Structure formats: C-alpha cells, structure tokens
Image (cartoon, rainbow, N blue to C red; front, side, top):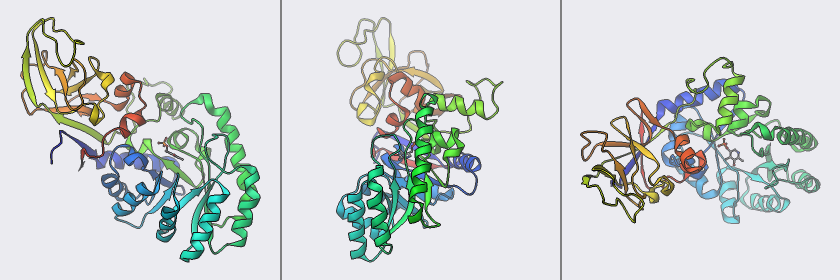
Length: 390
Ligand SMILES: *Cc1c(COP(=O)(O)O)cnc(C)c1O
C-alpha cells in the first residue's frame, strides 16, 4: 500500500554503469557487486535481480541476514561473499549453502573447520590480511596457525580468496598509506601462497580504488557505490576525469560516465495559503513575511529526509526548485510553492533525481547536510516501495 513515496530504479542506468566499470577493469576481473546496507538503500530484493540481468554473478554483503536476503532474491547461479561478522548458526548455514566468507582471526577459522567437517562440505574462506586499516584482519603472528589449519584439513577448508581493505581510497591524501597497504598485501599473500589453489582470488579494491588505482584491481573488485552511479567522493570524480584525458575539459559540466539509478519521488498531498505574520510548521523557525502558497508532501525525517534540511533544502516540482519551509516533521515536509504557479494536489515531487531539466543529486543533498552520499542512501527506509523502470 502507498506509504507516501516511491523509489524508482533504472535498469538502463545500471546497465550503463556496470558496462562502464566492466570495460574499465577488463573481462578477466570479477566484479563483486557490494549490496550491504540494503544495497545502499536501493533495496536488496529489487536490486539483485537487476544486477544479475547485467551479468553480475558475485555479490558481497556484511552479514548473514543480508546474505539470506540476497540468496532468496537470486535468479541465477550467483555467488555470495560475506564480508563481516557471522555467528555460529549462520556460519553453518553459509557453509551448507556454499557461500564464502571472510576470516579475520584463527578462532573463526577453527570454528569453520569444525562445522565444515560436521556438515561434510568445505568452508569457502577469504583470508583477510591486516595491512594498515586496523579494523579487522589477520596479523602476521596469526599466519602460522592459519597455514597449519589449512594444511591439516584440506578437505574442510578451501582458501578461495585473500583480501584486505584500503583505509580511505577516496582521497589522494591517503595514497602513501595505501601504497604501504598494497606492498604489505603483496608480501603476505606471497608468504601464504603455498596454501592457495589456482582458484584463490586476490582482492583489495573498493569503488574508489577500482576507478583510480588500476594496479589494486587484481582478480576481483568489490564495487559498491559506483554501480549505483555515485562517485565515492568529489575528489575521486575529479581525479578520475583528469587521469582519463579530461585535462582540458570543464570538470563541472563534464558528462558523467556514471548515472544514478535511483529516483525518489512523492506527490503533493495538499496546498494551502498562508498570510503574512503567520508561523509555518512547528515552532517559530519560519515567520511568513508575505503571502505564501505552501505544498505539503508525505515524507519527513522518518523517511530519511534529513531534518537538517529544515528551512534550507529543496525538492523539484514542475522542474523547478521548491524550497523547504519551516522544520521538517517526522512524516510531513512543507514546501514553498509561491513562485511556482499552478501547483496542484497530486503533482509529482522529486526528492532525489531528475525532473524535466533539473536534477537533485544525492551529493547536493549530502553537501547541504554534510552527510556522506553513503549515509543519505542507506538511511532510505526499507519499506518505501522500490519500482524497477527501464
Ligand atoms: C563496503 C565495502 C566495499 C565497497 O565500498 P564502495 O566504496 O562502496 O565501493 C568494499 N569492500 C569492503 C570490505 C566493504 O566493506
């Protein structure tokens, strides 16, 4: 049932993004579509089949619950990799279903071995190496135990990957640290190579590294934000355009090779006239100094429309900017449509995305609120209807 707004997902935009990334990394590199955080707010159930239609056969998630949702949404024979925490019960499930998962301490590898033995299927593990992010990852002193476990239980443990994660690939300021991480990764994976098979995948790259640091791509790239048509940061975008022959181009108006696949829209629920001297919305944050025509929309901070956009943000109606007036409420926001003549109840309102020649990007949204692209997206509630469009 209608709960105020709709998120449309564009198959053709996704096709463009994935073929662009595919062409960049070449045929030999696996693209793992990272769909944690409810596919960055796009909706796992809707997004996974869309990505499979574009020949994605590898998905990454943060935990077993997300893995289960991806698993239930598959329409092809795709593989699922769990990057994060898993409890014992879910670990057994993952082994049974043939999912792979990251191992970042010997205790987890021991548990996986024992469960795999009981189940009678090998645990498909990716050894996560600590290279300098200092979050999770096997330390050097863990390695002898890891090697011993794999060597004594080859039928229970299959090392399908060796991996690590960069500490801030979206900024050149971190390149020295990343260079060091990359060197460490090469050294340690060399050291571990006796326990690898010909299938063992080496992987480190997230979107920013995939786009701007070709040598980090190795066998598999873990692409999250870029497949949805967003740059990990403005800096990543500028770096990419400069490196790819756009030195003499206008970097502001350059045609973006990535296209947003998400459009978030609602409709005007009511129109009202307000006289000068009246306050608009809760409290006294907006005092009308002239006659106003206001439009309400059934979307508020509960739906991920940031409260910080009170008296500050805008949405699109009839291809024009309609400013937010007064404070954003939990499930209603008030817009000033005084300067957009003729707006009527039921008209389309675009919160994120294009309308006529105007566009509200998530980044303009996030610049106004100082939230990351990533954060604005994942805050979109799961219960907003997601619709696939061409
Ligand atoms: C989230 C995540 C990614 C994807 O990051 P993007 O910047 O969205 O491409 C890759 N690897 C790991 C380990 C992650 O947690």
